Image 1 (tube, rainbow, N blue to C red):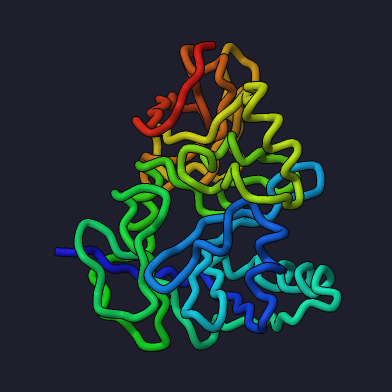
Image 2 (image 1 turned 90 degrees about the vertical axis):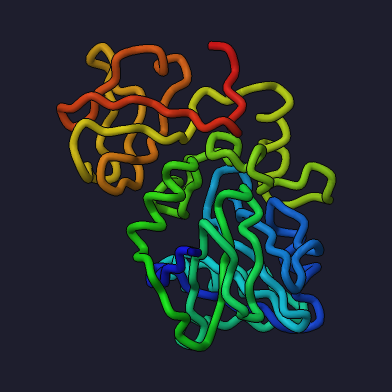
Length: 270
């Protein structure tokens, strides 16, 4: 049976108007033109220096773009997009009060019109946006355990604004960057990072020796900080770790942690 969970920490930002696609496409890391009924695009907005600001799933019903994202980030993103809008015909509105976000995994999705497969991995499942309540048989915490085990980030709980590079967080392997599209903010550093192999750290799953260590807990190797823990549930977490420390004995919060790089992740020789 499919697992279905309401994600109360997620919200929906709506972009409407004739220029909505070209406007957003000129700003974000992926090709917005590929979003459509039944197809989601995962993308990020970066700083001009190529550092992460915010990411979202982009869904389209043919008349508007709907950004499934962390609700806490919606006011700041809406304000930023309005500044960039200039004369573009785009209307930007928070629709979180009317549209709820659901995750579905381990089976087929319910018959909800605004539903599409999570584009990152087949195992990730589906995303649904609905004005109505969908019967749920799982919790947001259960979904967190599912995505963390797969190595999938969830916004600011895993990615650090003005610091994280997209390729550190799997946006290349997981389809969050379109390398063929035109220019977007932060493209130059993102491309240079890929083609020069400049990645020195990665976000990846780890197993904890104790439960629920807080976000930001330092990860240590030989007494030196080599990373930080990000989101966790139970004894699994995501952590940003230096690649040259992965073969060392690691600890966080006084307990040992074990890196578990997922099979999709391209790990360079270090």
